[in-house]
Length: 119
Image (cartoon, rainbow, N blue to C red):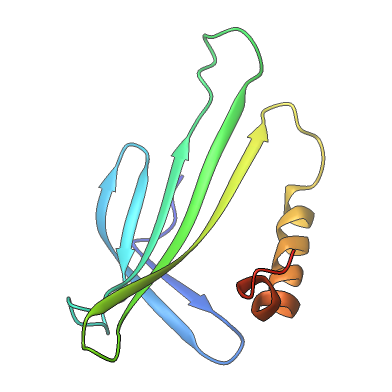
């Protein structure tokens, strides 16, 4: 199962479309087609699934990453990246969606403080 080739991501005020550019066995990289090559905006979704043949905890790992490149005052590209890692044991019975919502809400109301180095 995979997401469609094009993914639309909304932030409440606007939305972005990311078109698939690279697919491999572990995930997909998508770019915002409205952005020039010098200042790309990229969405990456990657997975490392547990090897069911090994002993011990079976843990799946998922990465959702959005990077945005802009030009600084000297017209040089600079990139900011937000990564969300989901590390989930196969036998986890909690609601991972709740955890994602908690992180979303924390970041929504505290991004500026976190970027100032507050914990």
